[in-house]
Length: 66
Image 1 (tube, rainbow, N blue to C red):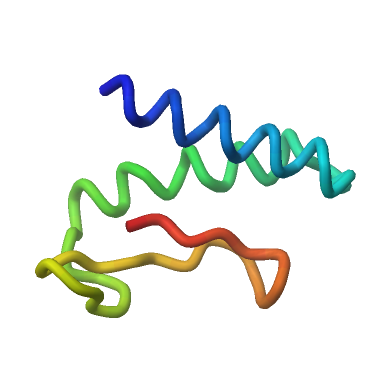
Image 2: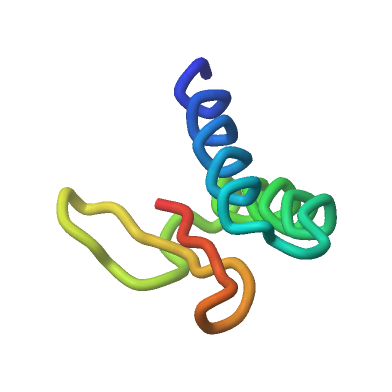
């Protein structure tokens, strides 16, 4: 799963550049959503390639997991 670590690297860089408040809590939300996608891969909205994306968080402060 090296791609997961790359994703988190990009997320952390984005949070640092954007001076995101409460970043540890947001990371926790993302980590907790991963098992949800594992158990229920068809939740969320459909995207290309037969995949689905799940919005984690709210509005402009959310993240999208595919």
